[in-house]
Length: 308
Image 1: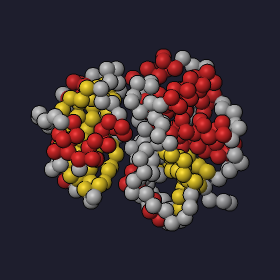
Image 2: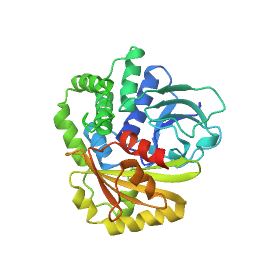
Image 3: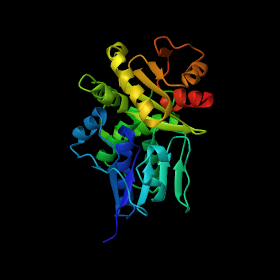
């Protein structure tokens, strides 16, 4: 029996990571490649669970590591420090991604499809068309949900015309009202009261590295920033512990208001100066309000990374 080729997104997976993994497996099978299997590298968040429940499908199997030589396909990421334990010794066959390329190297040639779109699933939708495959309702909802999530219903500055066109077409295939479904889905992901401070900090945290300095940019979506800030002291205790245990120079925790498209960030660590320089604002009580900032990929990471 042929060994499975594992498909997965990044650690602390979001809706795009999970949905793109599932859709990528569906696309492979339509292409006659039956050995691929979608898996995940972390717990499913509430927003993604809303999508899975809506479709009545189970989340992909959870894995924690891969063995040397395991064949894998990466979606929605390429940086090794955001991937599975053992990725350095795995055989990467392909990547489909919409992020920057960093800390990535392979010993063999591979298929690499990266485009500066708002969502990985937009790229996958174009692949369906390129191969001449029809899109069924299930994969249409999966891809539409990923685009809604990554672009915040097309309000994020990461949104491209490709994302808008794809979401319109997918909505028609899925026979859903994108605005109504999308708002319900996004709100499902903002129910944070039953999360511990540890869970909140780790819910959507991405590890970065530049010139030997390690830093993290974490993000949570909400409809009320103040509700999260009520827990600032306990959140900071967790963040300080992460900084110490992981040798981090900086930890940025972004609390994003999905209704008003603003963020408040908490920043701790030896390199908080990078945040202050990036936005030309001084931190007060370890916080700064950023009007119109909602995207980690386009509005937080590039300017912070530039000043590290």
